[in-house]
Length: 513
Image (cartoon, rainbow, N blue to C red):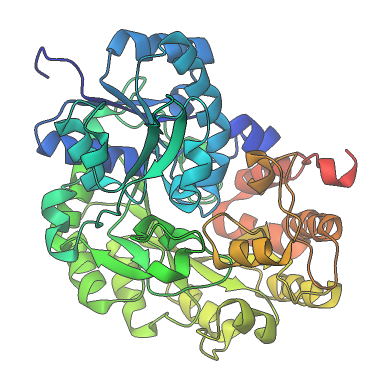
């Protein structure tokens, strides 16, 4: 670092207490701030000074975080409110808004910017917050570079891909969005998003030891959860499911009705580049690694050479990643396993084929879900099955059908979500058009929060959807057949760990708690 002023302080806020309730202390994962790492490294590659403040990992108090920002004296504070989970950008606004307001009170002249999925979904709403000066309108890579090349004051009008508060003749602030900026194209991924600034992350005794893997990723063994890291090998998704907002960070259109399905698509780093990044992590002592791609198991042109390279390097990683049930290629599973992919998350979503096809716009192919799960498990890979309760066409009967399927499949892990109209998703715009009830707070979009408020379906109230989801979770994880599976696969202590987890009951405002 040179003696010049720090160009940008990238802040990953802490919203865990509200987002996860009693699960935050022990059971929820603490993931490295992937996009803060990418943006920091990208800025450094262009000659700018960058620092990262991870309030979640360090569990910084509001006062300590404000003091840290004061001491670092950055030219720009940028809140990076992304997240690997689809709702994380919105729920991260809980801690981001609280801290941004405090920093603005402490240093009124310090420019504060926001970037991330929620900001991309609702840029005008975020810019309207009194402590926000600038918003970056998509992933923000080129907009951030151009901001830092300027004075962050009178030249904001020249920076494409941002919004800012423009003053009229009377000095009144107007919300102003500049023309859009491009996202990093495929051919420049290695060059303009050149890896991760791992060295900027905080740690206690060794790198990445403040981060912990998902409980199940470590075989339900708390001692194996750290150090932990997460990495993308690609960005975006080719599909446009109603409930998903992942692609909203690709938007290049300032229109009010734009949603994630309008900017679907994938971009890839070169396989050798990513394999080298994974080797860096292995050399730092990381064993548990999440591949965060939405559709890792999709394009053989990229995943085959990458996994072959990782296998050849003998990195000893325990990895997990995503696939749709209709994109699993049985012939590739041996390659996955040999490379260290020990868990595969399958987006099953709903037990009813009719409900599933409606929310995925018919893009799901007809597949035998039971057969796919068996094929994956026969390859020695554990299955995380993802289910969503409360799609618009769901009834109590179809939600029970989803739960019955989950109990029948009895996979090593199951995620169960209530359906919500996440900002940036097609269903959010549908909810706005139809006047459907939406959460009144950021915490209302957090699946596990006290304030969680899912969508009502055409047939079932929001409260009944949430009640069904919470009861389904307890039914699944206390099911003797599931606990026997955990004990047989991972051990008796691991079974006890799962049983301890189920003793933590979430409180829900919607259910009268």
